[in-house]
Image (cartoon, rainbow, N blue to C red):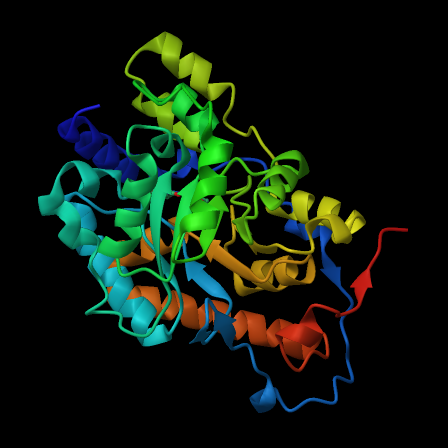
Length: 345
Ligand SMILES: Cc1cc2nc3c(=O)[nH]c(=O)nc-3n(C[C@H](O)[C@H](O)[C@H](O)COP(=O)(O)O)c2cc1C
């Protein structure tokens, strides 16, 4: 695929992701996590702590801006805006796929945000299918270096690639390539989906390959099948894509399944995402077993309004998360993870 094809595709992705019709109709599944309200919390709200650490750095809340963009003029501005806000709010920032910077080195700048965000975790990003191309492993290391990243994300999106015009359809050897990355990378490797989720079969494979962090990127939010269906440009491809609009598994479904056999996955920590739209969603995801949550679309919408809107979104989610702690008698994230739940009768 040529650089101009990648450029056009990225621009179309940004435009279509803003469109409400590319959000999944199936919910994020988090309504199933029901906290018991605690009416005598024995807490002073001002003492509630939601800060923690991620990749060895302090963060103010377990919220990450998910991988989105980079490489086009529009997304260079978006990345800068996200980086300024992430630094101000002290939350991690994941960059979008850096493939374009490898093909067009003059576009590296869009991914070089360390001068704007010196103290937060920044995560580089590359597609799983790119790892098996010639020189793929070295190129992945280059991405981490270009971004001065604290970790490298590998995204697994076979469904999207199959639906995408000229998408990567050869996924042979991707697992082995991830194993090599884990063994040889100077920074931690994080593996994610892009919104259709990872079930326990894939999660177990990744754990066995030595992956220590997985972002489940499940259903309930942005639907890449719908985005590709709308991009298709011909009726047949649109029909093929639309059938998969709500395909996949939510992060909470996978976390619930993991909780049935926790010893199998003990070496791995999980980031919940896919339709995270409030601090209550974050609280529920943490209670279901996630260490952190990430979101893309809400940050895209906020960034369109300006840097202040991004900071305001983070502040809203932090306040909702703290209120959930208060209303469940949890003094911090660790106690929230053990808060009492209501179970279906
Ligand atoms: C505009 C846009 C661009 C994205 N680009 C990437 C990408 O380059 N690499 C990646 O791993 N995920 C990408 N994603 C997927 C997100 O990181 C996230 O996993 C997914 O959108 C689910 O989160 P959401 O429901 O909060 O949008 C993108 C999402 C959006 C909305």
